[in-house]
Length: 413
Ligand SMILES: Nc1ncnc2c1ncn2[C@@H]1O[C@H](COP(=O)(O)OP(=O)(O)OP(=O)(O)O)[C@@H](O)[C@H]1O
Ligand SMILES: [Mg+2]
Image (cartoon, rainbow, N blue to C red; front, side, top):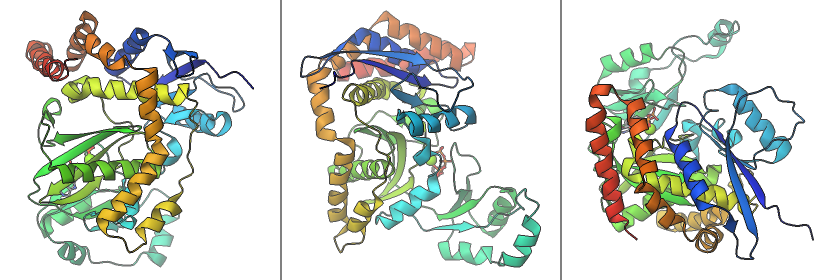
């Protein structure tokens, strides 16, 4: 029998961020070698990846890559595709599912799966796409349509937003016909959805998923970034909390997304998903604050689980298994239960939990010590200095130190 591979390299593909990569590196160093249940010792190292020419036949170094760059930078995106196809590298996330399945695809999948996506219509481009063949094709095949009638059908107010949205680009809340035409005229070459608004929702829940772990947080999109995640624990009823968790896991497992954030609007007892495709989610300490230690631990645990246990990338979508449940005459609740079994099987949840308990049993203590350390405080100071104007440094440092102090108090060993 061949010896298990005991040296592993995790690659980080990064943009401007310094905070979480530094946190990840520091915690991995504090953790040291990992001993699995059979007594084998694994050495895991981490490297920040650089952008270089690559031969398509070339080996790649890392066994697993955590990517926060390829959503806008195409050279590393193409490198990831080659790594997935030629080298079988484990990717968080695979560009095949993430870059090719945007918000619109997630809506379609969720509709088919029986989730309560608000009524949504895709309208043709307002302005010609930049292609010499457009004028001829459009004159021949583009049917005239009545934008007002579509909007009247959906009802005001409604949201107009790009089919592949992200970062609030091109999103408008439209209150009447005049605003509708204004928003559509402004959409230019963006392809737009019109979507019924969930008015007067009680809670906006945003859940961050890393592999088998999901944190559901109370999100306030109207506040500045550092205040958007409220620290609140029982803001959903147990049943609604479980539903939000189940839906997030379902969509992530369905598309094989292992690092993603999902947004739902909860009104009464109804859960309406509005945004389930957020590739490379923001996990900056200045946005997550209280939840940052959780996010870094989850990222560390999941990437170690994948590399040390040799979990293979499983990109085959197996949609038929999900649709079999979707198309059955089960109730909504029964479908969610059925999907949960598929999600757990995809994420190998039991195996993951067993790995955490047996192979990284000290990790939670190590994270606690680290958050209380001078090393962590230095990271916070550097991040605040790099993020805010000088006059605001003291205020923000006090703000984040307070929130992380609260995390320490709530998570004392
Ligand atoms: N159907 C809806 N009903 C009510 N509010 C909505 C709806 N769709 C979008 N919104 C509001 O508009 C915001 C932006 O919409 P959405 O999340 O779809 O776009 P985005 O570009 O992905 O933004 P972000 O990157 O902030 O998530 C949401 O956070 C929410 O406040
Ligand atoms: Mg969103």
